[in-house]
Image: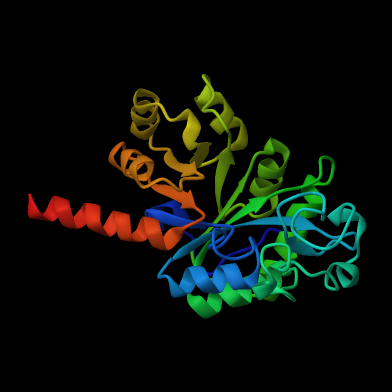
Amino acid sequence: MPSYQPYRQFSAYHHLTPVIAHRGASGIAPENTAAAIKLAAEQGVQWAEVDVTISADGIAVIHHDSDLARCSNGHGLVILKRLAELKELDCGNWFSPHFRGERMMTLTELLALANQFEMALNLEVKPIIGRETETVWAIYQALQRVPFEHPLILSSFSIHALQACRAHLPDISRGLNVEAIPQRWQDRIEEADCQGLHFSQAFFDANQVQQIKQSGIHLLSYTVNDLVRAEQLWQAGINSVFTDFPARLLESHFQLQSDRGHH
């Protein structure tokens, strides 16, 4: 498998903004759909996080769960359906009749949409266990079809997926996803060879955060919908927070910066 060569080599982590739209503006639109990405862009968001998995015919598609039931009118596993079958599903009506007819996006469609909005992306690689390399290969193929020059991070809970990213997409920044920050976080980051650690805000520990920051690792936290919590994380030095309500947090961060400027 050849290695993807991006047009510019840089760490996407140096281009982070404080707010990342979690699965798009998923608090007000169906997650991982074009509608959620468009709404986030309209709200002024510069980064979106989405989930990437594969169809039965090996095409990278944007969907969080391994199963179709929660976020579409389909049933069964995504990976057992061909793209043509997935494209027939309604991925919006479950959220609201207003979004009836939203279709599952391929990664190539998402990349084109993000290019249109000049939006940076965090692609969370969500492989079925055993299909990690195939999922990364599908991402590679999508990036070959759609030149994407904006900052890009590949993150995953799967060490195998991250190792496949390192092997086949070596110049794209990588982040290790965890719920709780591991006690031996250095070993885990080294094993995955990542520049970022993305953790659940429920496990925030200010002392641990300071220790990790000093090592040069970038820290991101999910899923933060509470303004007080967001401000606490920013002040502790967290680079970015993932949120379902990006407009709300953007406003809060702007206000925080404005207040600091007056002191």
